Amino acid sequence: MKDGPDISRIGQLIGDPARANILGALMSGKALTATELAQEAGVTLQTTSGHLAKLADGGLIRMRKQGRHRYYALTDDEVAGVLENLMHLAAMKGHLRTRTGPRDPALRHARICYDHLAGDKGIQLYDALITNALLQEDGDDLHLTDDGEMFFGNLGIQLDAIRSNRRPLCRQCLDWSERRNHLAGTLGKAILDQFFERNWAKREPNSRVVQFSTEGEKQFRALLAQID
Image (tube, rainbow, N blue to C red):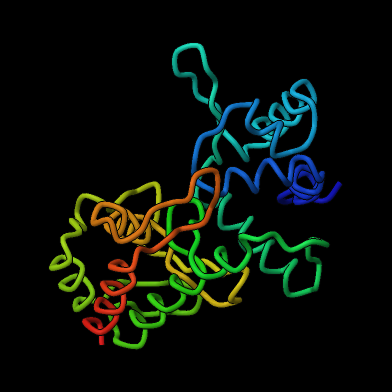
């Protein structure tokens, strides 16, 4: 018997098409019911219940009760990061869905990746933060600089409030559509939350697409100019 982590079990869990669809749906960051996930998976509710039990037993999803309902979500952003990296690998190796959906250009422009901004908008923001030394890359690690702390404080983000022992403040996340990094971690979530609170952007119903308003596009460009 070989020692060490058993990646084959994770591969088996993710490799089933129905379970892959379930996990993809949960990449929206929303907690969904078994009925909603059955529709995403394209299988019966009974079959979905079996898939959910396996995913929960494998530590990839968690369940919580609210009243009479049970809701399912990804366990944490580490699971989301692995899924996003697999999406990147699949796209890079040419393993794409046969039909491109009508929302595909919108997904590539701006989408939610678990709880932070991905797509072209996420890449633009990340690149600006790196280029202007508000974030600093150290191999695969990512650090907020002193200038970065001042910048985000002025933006209204309370850094002390979002620092957590459970999740990193900032983390690289490889974008499957752009094949470059965007910003994850509690800081990535806080930035996207700010966009929503300021009504610069909103999530499309039942989708991972993040839609920026005309004013939001203007304010986003102004934010990038402010970083520069």
